[in-house]
Length: 259
Ligand SMILES: Nc1ncnc2c1ncn2[C@@H]1O[C@H](COP(=O)(O)OP(=O)(O)OP(=O)(O)O)[C@@H](O)[C@H]1O
Image (cartoon, rainbow, N blue to C red; front, side, top):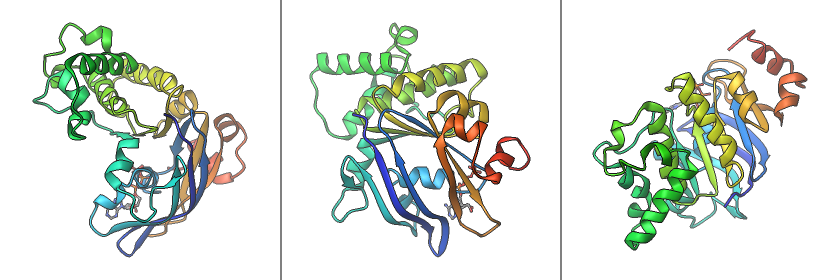
């Protein structure tokens, strides 16, 4: 559980188009890192490169190294499916499997991995994952009901429970609260704070207050102009990035002067 992520000389392409250039960053275990920056600067692209989801798009590929748990996930012979098991992802829109019950949603990852489990073990896993996602008390009496019957915020926490049920080292989140109301957003933000005790978390957010509230480190991505690659121009403690950034572009973005 909870591993560092060491990114070296990472270039990320969509076919001929270099979308993100020369990223070098070290992300510590048991930390929350927020990625911020203007639209189109490559935050989501970079996030997806951390679990090899990027290359699912035809023609998309990466050059460089991403080392998680002493393994370069882009090394020869590395199985992307294994990587995605260790590096889970939560998306913008909650996406529980609509026809599955809450219970089945939580263990869907285990089923996909062909893990056979005793009923008592899967009961334990469902409970611990839902507790880990701060959802157990709200759903424990209706585990056999469809996941799609929950509120948006509950659905997102169900997706987080499903992600942590496979016991990943890293959890990636791409704007996990943008489809949620303020109360649900707070519930997910609280949860992020708790999850970092066990996981390394990287979150893309457009919400500056959210980045300031939940993260230990902040990375600011920027882009020089249309068609140019995005770059990680500043990465530091969140308090430093928000109060005393090194780059003028970071300050301008954070103070709302562009983006
Ligand atoms: N599937 C794709 N095929 C080709 N180019 C893409 C694809 N997805 C994204 N891009 C391009 O890659 C660049 C980075 O996009 P990305 O979505 O990573 O930015 P972002 O910072 O996450 O933006 P936003 O904040 O708007 O979500 C953009 O120029 C975008 O047009």
